[in-house]
Length: 348
Image (tube, rainbow, N blue to C red; front, top):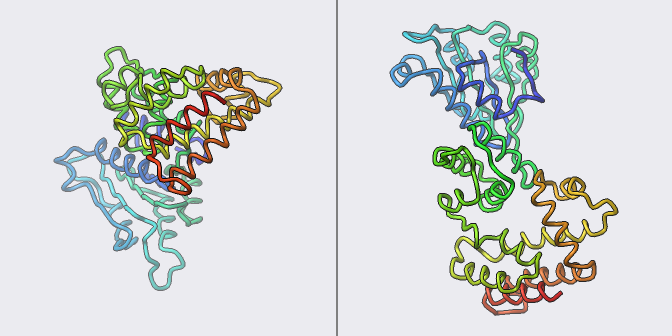
């Protein structure tokens, strides 16, 4: 069971733990707390029943934990259970004891020969666990795994995460549905996974579609940002203004700053795509940082509808609207400004 710094993913660990296959030691570290919290709780829930936890679950917190006491707990055998689980939460707060350079280094000797019936989980948030003796011992003894919980970036990373998690639930999700969730929920990973868990249960044929999302997540498949984008791409004024009217009636879910930012990103990528000599979906996907061929085709459609001069003007309109919507040089209602923006885009 070697330490695999580069290949260990949330999806792979999630699947492995659910199957009941455990490592002796888990180091869960990094900037995205959701993955760390979810994995440590999954280990507890899978390894121990509720009745077994009274005797076989030891929880420590970094601001009060004594590493020697943690190691002593790890060396105790389980009672009426196959496993004993020892969890150190907020390990980044572990204080140095007098005479020690780094108390986390004390785990090195335990990593060399861990008790097979103990599962030690160390949760280190905010960055990498800084203890070379410990991580080296893990690698040499092949006694555990290090998982790096990285912040998920919008675009390709977020879309890939949504697709991978849906797949781990046994579901298919199409490109438009993926983009709808990525745009509406963003990098709130806890909510993304919660919604996907719900959609997986509700989907009778294991297909997560835009219609299923509309019915159960609160995103309209007819009146959402992507439909506005589509209307502008096709210069369909009637549809565009119907959508803007819907946004105005539902301002909480459709704030104009977010809409302006999304349109700015869309038309900026479209402008750059219009200058490419090789206008293939693959090139545009790489340019936009997306794994969605559906999105790439939308950018290409826009390049055929708007020439370079029009696109430059549109980006100028977007910047002007953004400034005015913040009260600089204008006291107009935000949706009045947005309607004016949409008109200018359609006639650029």
